[in-house]
Image 1: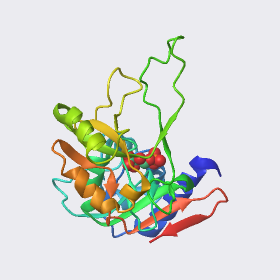
Image 2 (image 1 turned 135 degrees about the vertical axis):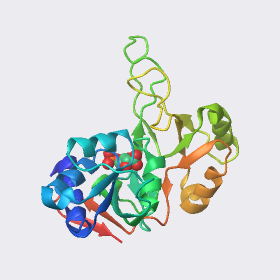
Image 3 (image 1 turned 90 degrees about the horizontal axis):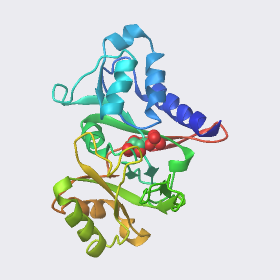
Length: 258
Ligand code: DER
């Protein structure tokens, strides 16, 4: 069914299994897979959804909820969420995730941790035995791609861990990642439709830090080391949070990891 079909398959299966009539407070993630989650929830009917409140994980997620005509809520008001469903960039055998491809992982982690049940939905590309196995393509536009003298950069493959940092400290965090934590290719995520870096919904920057397998094979200890760097706001490593992950496959089947 192709990648979009695989995303829809994962999302529909997860919603049918985990978004039940008695669930009233629902967390909605960010990215290109969660629109299928909202699509399936809407199919459960307006009666049911009128009694529900949906908590967003950023600007895109909020717009998704509003456009679907669903009730919008805030985690300040609903400190405990029944179920949160979100995408991921990569999921290992223990349900550890790399997240943050959409630069939304700070609010995503807050809403994921606030939920009694946190479910991941993704297409088959994200299903991995260990983090860093699949590569995520990032093409930092170091040069203006419309300039004939600088041919568009080939897509640079990195296994980056997205890290949200305060702008004031980004250069120091970069230096520490490169020279202390063993990520020499860590880089500031540059915007595509704006000159300069990507700016998050929280007005921060994002650094993508690739780590070799031996450094990322224990994702929770790597998470702690990165989190302790002064200036780091949140790290796109989600460890011991998800209860299950649903992957849509090319053959129309769904792989479930629990
Ligand atoms: O930023 C995130 O973690 C998002 O969940 C995103 O990375 C998921 O990606 P998707 O567009 O493949 O769903």
